[in-house]
Length: 403
Image (cartoon, rainbow, N blue to C red):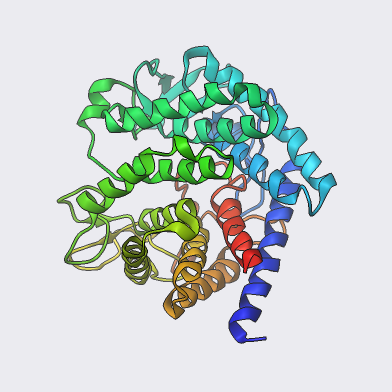
């Protein structure tokens, strides 16, 4: 057995164990409110957040996290169904509970929101952290809609097939909003069509929704993923900087979120599988390599780099971009056999499990800098519910098993 084959086999076993441990940890924690996942733990101290922690505490529910967690529960349950039926059944039990709650919440006005207070009323934050009621979304859609829609689609396909068309229609509404400039990225501010239309034209929303394209393919709804080609073309035509080979967050500006670029690569390869066009694969292979080399400042991948100078623009290295790199590099290696992609996979694997993975409990530090862990929240204070880490590692698991 070659060293490369050994690495992939060992990595696969590591990923299965890590994902199972995290999911069991989540299942063992008491649900919050009406059945919400509870990942409210400080990744540095291991202390559970409580009422004194304000917006990190149990009185605040984040739509982002619950939608991501629902997709993770349903997807992992499908994977474990033939490998550990009892575990899959436990995941399904929790998934059905969360599906019912999120479906009811979303049905009330057709949307999901970033944060809810103790009364489950949507709220937003000002720069000082003060809360106020969030405006009704109306025609505006957000990242929370994207994550909750993906979770509802994944769960409906598994638990409530009679609901699937309605959830697919919700997902279609998110896609239309992106293409019609009605998608607002900043959910801490009041939602409005004016704010959505005026914001910078970041590629983030299209990138996130490409994850839905792979989901649709997995559940037998590939015909609903016609937007994928449009989104891929849009990102590569408008955001790929010919000088640096990086993706500009906003066309004409200097900042590049290398983690988002790598996530884009993984989602596209996951959607196409073995049918990815050769020229597209070459473009994605170059984008993965250039983005990783630009952003891997150690111990992880920096939040953003300057395309002009190559310098890291922030000192923070969040956990999520390393598992996303594992997904992208594993799938790129599968599509090309390129030793460079395999090398990136090895480096990302080593960095994540050496510097970020805690093991006991089975969580990762949210953010590191060169000097070690820091209390910096990349998006929500709730820890990852098997989404960035779990679903990324699951893609690599399934690739190694196909081989």
